[in-house]
Image (cartoon, rainbow, N blue to C red):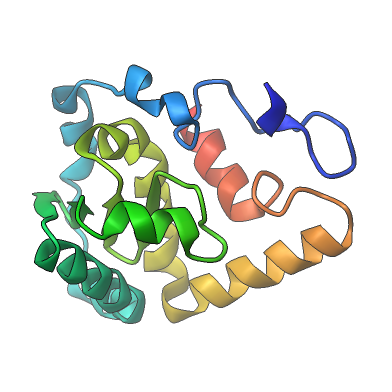
Length: 170
C-alpha cells in the first residue's frame, strides 16, 4: 500500500491497510451499534467550554454543510455532519485535504455516514485530545506537523496526536 511510505522512504509502523483515511473506509465501517456505546461518555461542562473555540469552527462548517444539503446527527457528546459542502471542504482544505473525516472540538465532519462510522473510534480520541488541549490543540498539532516535516518524517502518521489515536484504536 503506497500511503504507508514515509517521506524518508521507509514504511511507517502507524499505518494499517484498513485505517479510516483510506478510500476503502466504506468497506470497513463498523456496525453503528458496536460504536455507539463508545459515544455515550459524559463529560463535564468545562471540557465543552475549553474545546469550544474549535467546536464553533467545526459547527460553522457543519451548518454550511446543512445549508447546502448536508445532514447532522448527535452521537453522545459529539455532533457529526456530512454531505452538502463538507466533502468538498475535506477534499481541499489545507492539512486535511483528502481525508474522509476531520474533528474540530466536539464536532466531526465527514464525507458520508459510513465514513463517520468507520472513523468514529479514531475521531473520539481526537475529541478527548481537544478536551485536554482546548484551543491549543490545533497549534500544537501544526507545530508537530512542521517539525516532523522538517525532519523528513511523515507529518501525519508520525504526529504524536495521530500515533495516540491509532494506538488506542488498533
